[in-house]
Amino acid sequence: MAGLRAFIISRILLTIPMIFILLTVVFYVLRMMPGDPVIAMLGEKASPKLIEEMRAKLGLNRPLIYQYIDYVIGILKGDFGKSTWTQRPVLQEILDRFPATLELAIFATLISLGIGVLGGALAAYRENTVIDLLFRIIGIVSYSLFIPWFGMILQMVFSVKLGLLPLSSRIDPLLRPRRITGLYVIDSIITGDLKALESALAHLILPSVTLGIVLSGIYIRLTRNNMIEILRQDFIRAARARGVG
Image (cartoon, rainbow, N blue to C red; front, top):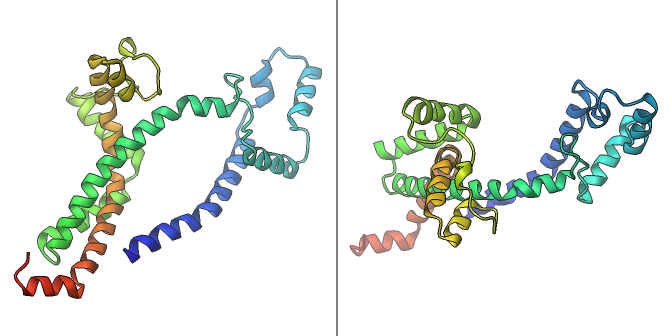
């Protein structure tokens, strides 16, 4: 368990600088992109005076460093600004789409844990055998996969070529259940809509399997290493000497 604890602590410590770097990169990439957000909001027919007033209102006429400080302070306060496309608060846009993200994360985590824990346990039990080597390779390869590329490969095979699974979206538009939690699988179960449940699960398979396989690599390694450490403990050796296991 020491290895797992150290891994979790290291990840937590790395989170803060990673978030800061991500915020900085996003800010400057958005400023470097072609186009004018004010014109996108007001339209190309807006008068120069109205455009300048909107720039002043949004703080876009201030030096870049002050814009960055306002940006970070706004993020910390939960103010992500407004979408130039819908004119709605960005936070509201995120919350509207959060159920889809949560649903995908839950199923992907279940798949990754299932593959990772079982694979890692089997590799540890068969340490230094062909099975161990196989799962170690699977762990390294899966964790190294580029998720968008791997997802497109699965789409090409199971959706385009074989036609077994939906290519995109979360559910058949005609089967969308009544919104209760925003999680289509849960909402379908609550409302007793089996057709919507079947459609929601079918649409979840490809993205969940894609993320689950990629994330399973780290669980295979963690489970294997921790189980090997436990299997080498004195109490395990004593139990084996007495014929247990």
